[in-house]
Image 1: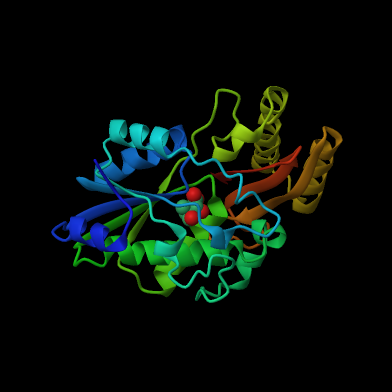
Image 2: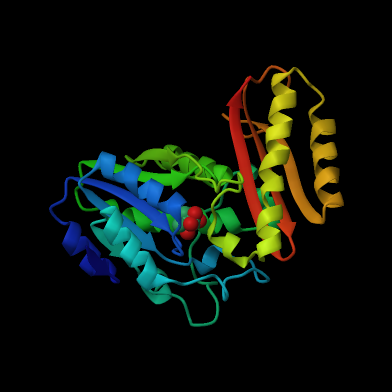
Length: 287
Ligand code: PAF
């Protein structure tokens, strides 16, 4: 496994590869990421994993500075999982116009209004930052005359996956996007790099987020049609248990717009804070 940190070295290493599968990450890897690498390996012999904590997708008061950086442990896990290349660029390598203070000179992608809903409401600019870095990474990994290009993203970040699929469709990128199922702890808690911020007690309590979503799914499958009420009741239940709910929302899994009675392919999504830790989860299902 090669560890590469410049775009020129990456392009050189990938020059003759005709089939590449790519897994973009921000590091601090857990079993969910390794599952994505396993899926990537089923698609291509050459698997590239990027580790880059992207400043463009963090808000001013978010955890950019404290986001866990665990490169050595990550590389060991990726080697064991069979990755071919780990790409770990610096901020300046990714954003050559970065002046050391801010990224104001960086070109970014303007996204449709769905990027301002759900997580986009409390994280303005987040998905534009994600789409911009992912497009740049795609250009770095795949613009080598590659014949078959696959990129793998986790379903836990459902709205992110939706934005990336739109990016690929609307910018005509010849890249197949594969969604990797959410990997969960035994309690139901979705694996996330941010779970490490939780205290032992909070980690036990954190499974309530998935449980409340499961509860909504059961009710929807049983025919409940008052979506607003289900969302509000679930939110109130969590808030009573010391969560600070950002949103709980029942959406069409196809368009991500608010679900109506005729939608049968649904996703119920939630974001909520436990202490200072913001967690997200979702369940996609047919009814
Ligand atoms: O999901 C993530 O880890 C990040 O948002 C991504 C896709 C690597 C872009 O920075």
